[in-house]
Length: 196
Image 1: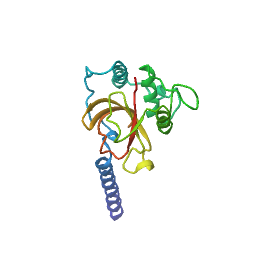
Image 2: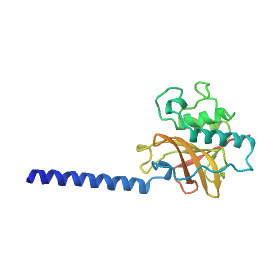
Image 3: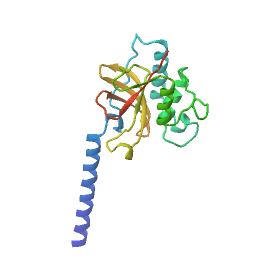
Image 4: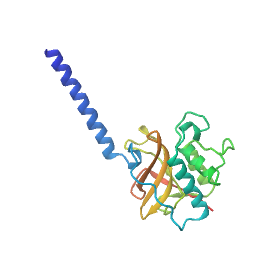
């Protein structure tokens, strides 16, 4: 009996620690890493430019009817947030050109950031107010920085002051929508601008 009691107490202690750890991560994690959506998909803003409208429509279609991760990465099993952004931009008529392969898909956030910088379409936080169709670029995505989740990217679908609504791929294994206070989120590196 003493051994059984000790095992039960040990298991109960481990379960308690796990619950506390999960609660601590959710308490400190940015909303984009919650396992649920933290916003509703917005209605289209009537003032969107044609380019913004096309991005908005593609993002909405992919959000409402998501495909497997490997669809966005051309069959490659990898972190696919930048693949998702590449796919959306291609479908919206604003295709990227990967500086390494020449293809439409830029699979890494670091290379995606370099692409925007080389195109003169990168705006650091503080130099730009995001707009629908802009791409948010994060230098680290979670409470422990690169050790936990590394770089990340998603797309702005609505703007309300310092809060934007974003949609991204590879968020908790799927396509998620979140509200982001971009001015106060220290992980936001800047924005890739949609352009005309």
